[in-house]
Image 1 (cartoon, one colour):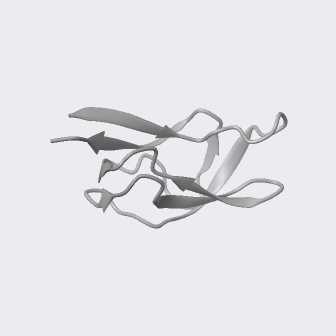
Image 2: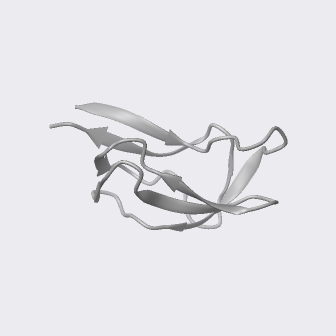
Length: 81
């Protein structure tokens, strides 16, 4: 089994942070690769964060309305096993 971190990516050179709008999954949910995990809002756009791989969602490390910085972990996907 491997743990794959899901972090806030940087979309554009000026993006520094984003607000978590909502989670579409819960801890323990099985997810497919590219399945939407959460919706974020930046100063320019709303966007979806997707699962990088299929697996099981670990703890949700941030809550709706939290402001997170680029590179900050959002959750972990456990793959395999």
